[in-house]
Amino acid sequence: MSVTKENNFTERETDRIISMAWEDRTTFEAIEYQFGLTEKEVIKFMKEQMHPRNWRKWRARVQGRKTKHEKLRDNDEVQRFKSDRQRQITGNRISKKKY
Image (cartoon, rainbow, N blue to C red; front, side, top):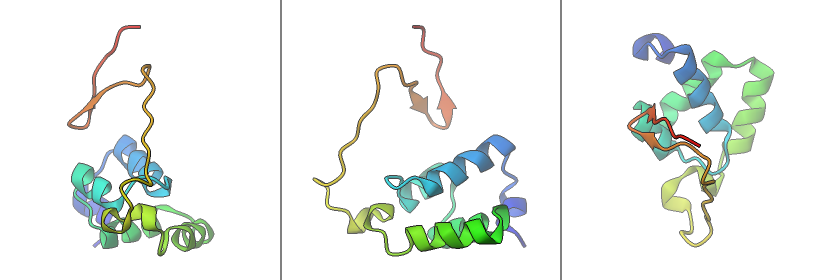
């Protein structure tokens, strides 16, 4: 059975998982924490969602990449930046911020 049908993700959640998987600094552990998908399930999910040529590009990009695995990272290597205009995310909900 497909990962998408098993988990019944909304279109917005599907888009977010794909964008997180493409991001260099977002780990598979972060995706698992937020959406409950293991690394193998993310790989299967991406294969289901993407055109085969794009999936091969993504797979080649993330395979063996240190930044996609929390345990392989050097903690000093990853520097986080957060804009003060960025909305706060609390448990998958984006809180409204007045500007």
